[in-house]
Image (cartoon, rainbow, N blue to C red; front, side, top):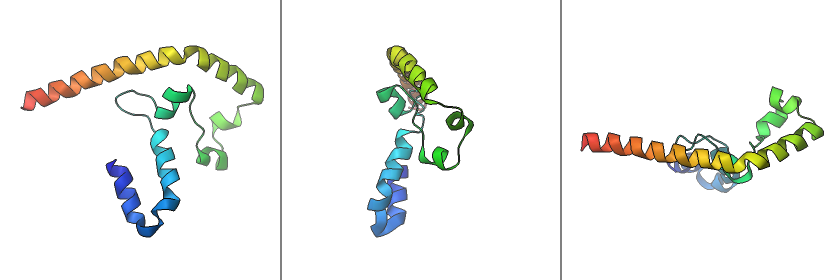
Length: 105
């Protein structure tokens, strides 16, 4: 939230134009607690960010419709496992933060 607030404050009155890009970058950035992006936890796949389309990366260049369809089916089959793994990682992260906080109290 601090990054979002800082970025939008820098823009002044033009914050509405930039809001979608800031939110998109937040949704496609892996979070420390889960190790996954919020987008991938909801949809089961990694998002292709606009810069990958403008300056094609290896991941974007090598993808065909057939490969994409097969990958989507595979991701739908493993999404529950990915979410369970993220839940376990969140619990471990929460314990780590709690230990660190309690050590300093």
